[in-house]
Image 1 (cartoon, rainbow, N blue to C red):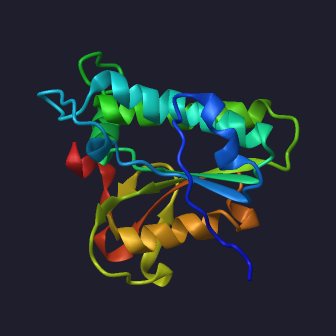
Image 2 (cartoon, one colour):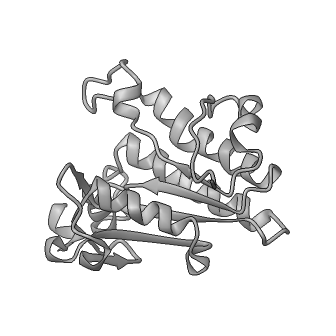
Image 3 (spheres, rainbow, N blue to C red):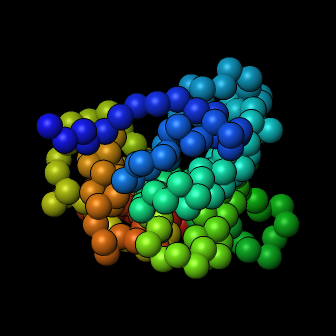
Length: 197
């Protein structure tokens, strides 16, 4: 039979560990759960502020470079830019006191790094997709027909982990998803981003 998926372990902060994970892959999905992975907590956000950047910015950058190096056709990034942070920043972009939380800042830097790394690559056979989930829940799958896809971070909503996983897998094989960043959430949960500001 055809081997559709495999699981392997590497440290995204150490590029030398990525070859065995990526060589021969058709698609790589970069998805992490930082809160579970790191027990060190910041009192305000419940996160280790140094470690966030190591994973979601530098680690993701390492994976993007390695995908190109080892000729992986598609990198799919599971992201979730915080709508509250995004909405506040859009409403007061000139105010230096209005800033994204550390996790969202690192995710944003990581997304931008992926775009830059792939833009610098002259071999266009390799590309990326950045999929930003709305608020993830543990509910049952409702199916892709219930999902609204958006670009521009002006709306967001809720989506189940199961349906978001389906979106990520399909993004790995859909030729129209290459070089694209989008948000997804259930149509009936959509709200304006600035509503949460």
